[in-house]
Length: 274
Ligand code: NAP
Image 1 (cartoon, rainbow, N blue to C red):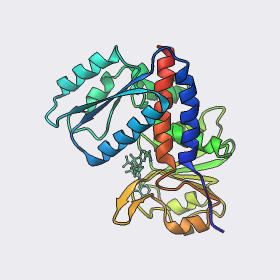
Image 2 (image 1 turned 135 degrees about the horizontal axis):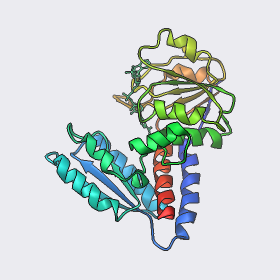
Image 3 (image 1 turned 90 degrees about the horizontal axis):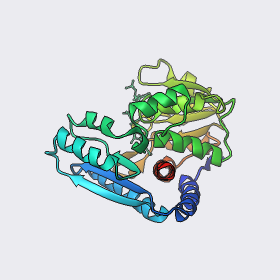
Image 4 (image 1 turned 120 degrees about the horizontal axis):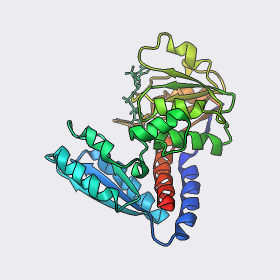
């Protein structure tokens, strides 16, 4: 039997509608600034998706599009000016080399991407703070699709700072109470870990990393990967996983819309504190 698809697009719409209702009660709309340096086509399409979501929710989004010859000092001074006038700032990644440290100029309260070391530190300590959007979106997706991770064995494949590592922290927090295994490219016999998972999250960035033979029947699979191929966008798991898994997120339409919804949620939260 084929796995049930977890509809991230529909769940993201539910979240956006809740946010829209909150925003409608605010005196002024939340303000989000998106900074793009250069013309990376993937960045342009992600910004378009964020801009459309902001419109639906009632967030005022301003796109600051800078040229590739922008210096670190230009970027820092723009962030410095925005820090005191908006509720959220994101710098679209990837940045040209040499500009990355400007990210730390974003005030932690405005860091709606949740990448600032202060926010990551709060996450490690189990304190409240902005959570990175993709991991927060995955956890929300699990709850809202009726898959409470409490007492479940969760295996995450991929240990990046924006997905795998923070997700392992959120899921293993007190109150969430999953038991987490974090795998990566140096994990020997990765199949033995994947086979044990009740919930398997794959964030690698390479198609067909996980095949049907590597998973347990009935497993819940969250496919984070976004890979552009000749046949369109695909995730990190093979199509045969659908025949073995109990539930699966589609690509596109799974984790992607949830990431955007969490960005909107962080922005509305920040505005309601300001
Ligand atoms: P990343 O920074 O490149 O990290 C990839 C991780 O995968 C690394 O930890 C790497 O291990 C591990 N890995 C690579 N090959 C592996 C293999 N064969 N077996 C096991 N582990 C392997 O990637 P990322 O930024 O986390 O993104 C991962 C994917 O998710 C990409 O396709 C990206 O586009 C997508 N993504 C989607 C969203 C969304 O909203 N839908 C958001 C963020 C990312 P090492 O650490 O050992 O190198």
